[in-house]
Amino acid sequence: MDVSVILLERIEKLGQMGDVVKVRPGFARNFLLPQRKALRASKDNLTYFEGQRAHLEAANLQRREEAQAVAQKMDGLSLVMVRQAGEGGQLYGSVSGRDVSDAIGEAGYTVERRQVHLDTPIKMLGKHPLRVSLHPEVAVTVTVIVARSQEEAQRAMPAVEAPAEEPEVEQEATEAEEE
Image 1 (cartoon, rainbow, N blue to C red):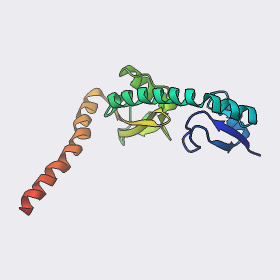
Image 2 (tube, helix red, strand yellow; image 1 turned 90 degrees about the vertical axis):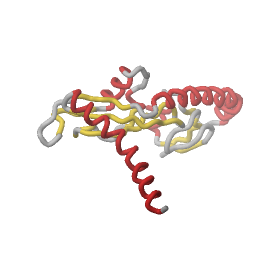
Image 3 (tube, rainbow, N blue to C red; image 1 turned 45 degrees about the vertical axis):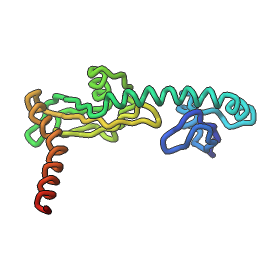
Image 4 (cartoon, rainbow, N blue to C red; image 1 turned 135 degrees about the horizontal axis):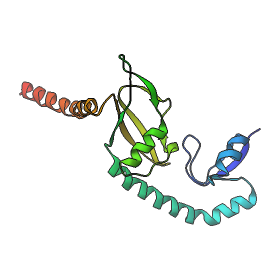
């Protein structure tokens, strides 16, 4: 038995602001309603929403513009996480969303743990691209480099930037051969 709600902001994989959608009662009761992301669908709430729609859209637009400004600054951000690992590159622990959000905080940005999209904890050394949602409509990709030491991470950093430059060199060589 699903419950109808009016979305007060865009919710990924659910709908846009103002949409009336059916969701599970627990999702509405435990997440959407307490976070003030939705209202129960009723005549009174629809009337209230229509009266507040311009104000809600203006507030959403302002938050989105702020998130886009932060996203431009965060674009290309690389975080280095030093962890102990075995010979095969398997970490003894793992890197969680909380670790990533703390590292982003140390880099000078304010990000909550729930904004870091990490399906499973990182358990291997190497470079891992992660999606960070700054706003329901604005996301940025952050690269997390997990290494055994700071020196190993510094050696991995040029490897992160070098592949982006190599295809351009190959392309120029191909163009020269065609002429």
